[in-house]
Image (tube, rainbow, N blue to C red; front, side, top):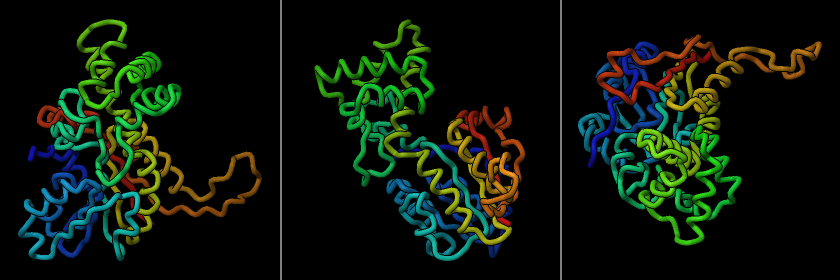
Length: 306
């Protein structure tokens, strides 16, 4: 099995969560267990949750002694349903978003344009949607929107048209097929520009297949309800759309009235439920980025339940 990535912003995460003996935390994106290992080392108990069964199996081996000692519980599940997975309240929750290095490096998972394999991209193979299902079936405009909105790709329309033309001739079933089509759609042949566009297209499809933004939006209020008073929620995002969802949720839940300012009296009766701990997102230092390039785009936001 390929290795998992080094946990991003670990020092900042621990400084906010303040793990110690007697505290219980949820690592809602277990992955290779990097953050969980640090929480356990500090004496805390951890509930590790991940939608990818391979992550659970990896951590069963990695944390065998912790599992035997009842300090760690591993669960296969989607953090969007965190309230259904967990019984009781906890002291802290971590959501480290995005894709793992293991998923990218495992060719048969289909996440990377540089790895040969079927065009899958499912973080949980129990779901029906796949990347090949999307690109071989949805309408031109919808495909273009996915590539533009989730990937930030300026040639989204050109790439979508190329895909539509290609799929009329042959079924697009592999990462190599899609990478080749994207390359042909880029106006210039600059290798760096091509690679960037390929990466953005694959990212966009991954987000769409796994409904990552919808799951995050659903998870945040449920995570907040799962915390004890004074419990803390840490979210590490790697995509601007993810970070925006977290920022807006925190902003809304940190104030009482959320009515339109033009309304003379409050009608919503909304009461603030959290205190924002990070006025600006924490980002990785230059030293951390040198050791862990994946951390370069990481943004950490945190809040405390009132």
